Length: 95
Image 1 (cartoon, rainbow, N blue to C red):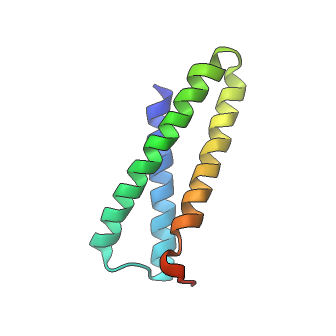
Image 2 (cartoon, rainbow, N blue to C red):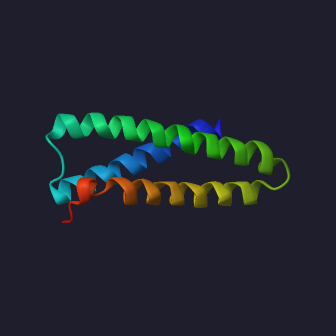
């Protein structure tokens, strides 16, 4: 139950942060195009994060739940950071 919820939360967080960065830098064609891209990117991030959480809670959590949760949080932070670093400024545009 933790993995899907944590994955969805990660996807939403990454999409919200990316949308704010794109808005601040005036990146994209229009709101509809950006929204469709954000839905796609957020879904991919959600699936990857849910898999990460599932492995940690399902495997590591058997022995130490605290380590599994901390690993999940750190892994989520790294995933969102990479997501932002790769997609924040498409085509090399710097704001």
